[in-house]
Image 1 (tube, one colour):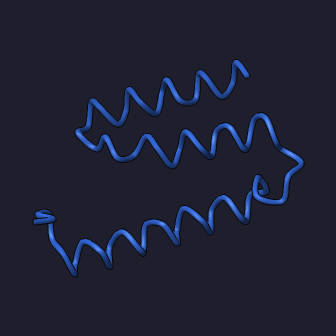
Image 2: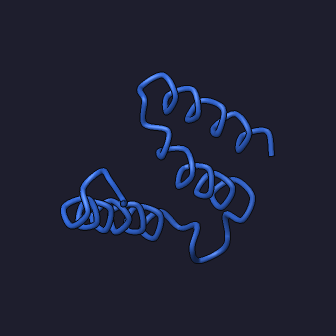
Length: 71
């Protein structure tokens, strides 16, 4: 559990110092999967990388469709 906490701490510092606070959620979830459920199929490297890639692609599509204003 110590590794997951340190990973989330470092990622949160990077997210808030760079201004990308939305970076924290996906990496926090991945840290818990990788450090605590490392034998689970979703915690395997290929799945983690592909899910981050899919999330980034879907975010780009949503950003292109709606922009920064949701109203």
